Image 1 (cartoon, rainbow, N blue to C red):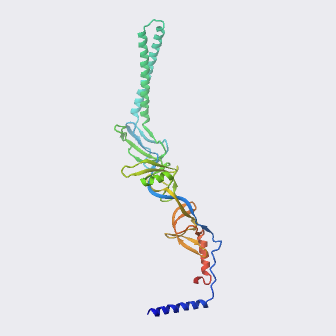
Image 2: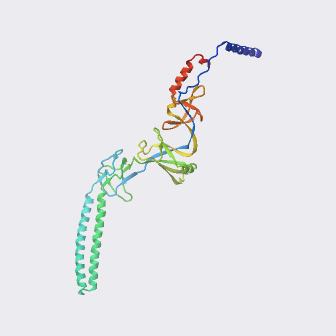
Image 3: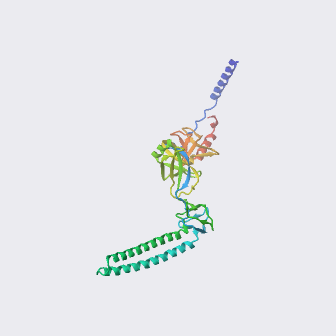
Length: 363
């Protein structure tokens, strides 16, 4: 049986060779033309990166608290409202504070009158004391009265300043431009300045100055400190290079991880406080392959490029990394030195012409 199979195989081979001898030779396939523009893929020096999760937070965020005991009479803004710097956030009733201010001003006027009288008496006594008409004890007594009146005036002025500050506290303004994230009081509510602690009123966050908090394992801290570079990768959008990185000088006692603050450039608008993002930290040197973004062919979830060989053009699937401008990083599917077609349509046209010529199917 085995002999019959071998004999049959030999017969088929001979018949095939005979057929080849009778068929006219097919011209060789043309090489890809020079007009088929391509880019040679070369490994470029880059940084090896590692990615961790982070949480966006506002650099400037504050909880405004009550500094005087009063009743809320006006709340011009609510949660999610954007306010300008200096905008009135809370206005309190100020009847008691104004009464205290008026009383303090009256106290100042009284102290000023007392001081003027004491000063005038002192000057009269000093004039006759120089002529020896009064005793030293009388002179010392008048000087002490003058000094006491001056001290009372200074105390009244200080008290007036404190009362004026309490009046200023009846109008609370935004220390910076931002968005209101929480409101803890309502109109008509009585609030207390303390004790034990001031009552919270409004929470405000600035959206124009953001950073990302990342928890890094202790094994990665040395590399992050050495290369000191990171980029924040939003879910939708281009990576954002960090303007600065701050690594805390101590680890968390429970998790043994280090907190790292990644500062975002001023005016970043694609991110908001509370969002989770990916942060890529530079961990070492590496080489990566970049191809023009125009060379990519997308078929559903698959991505490929046309690779230009010496005599043919082939479509090859690739796995992509990050995009940088007009180029895209290729993680797998290409080797250093290979040439890819910049224009996939031109590559398809060349393949169509090549396959349409006589005998192309036998190559």
